[in-house]
Length: 97
Image (tube, rainbow, N blue to C red; front, side, top):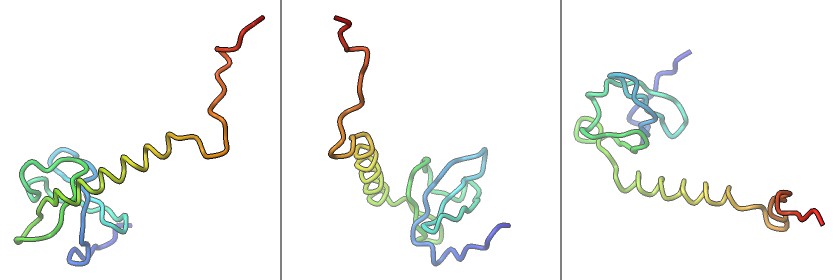
């Protein structure tokens, strides 16, 4: 079942992916919206954050950069072992003596 999204309430939209001539956008509430690719600003790419303005959609470069930086920090944190736990054991370094 597809929900109707009230676009004026969606402050930011993220370009999730492009399928042919269709842009798949995600709202902040994780709902998807399908729009013609031509409705987006020229040069819009997957991962870009868009907002309504000027009678259409505008790329929000500052918000895109902020979210990419935050995602990079979160990903880096996932790569660290939790505090109090040893690093993974590498049995290939054990001596056979």
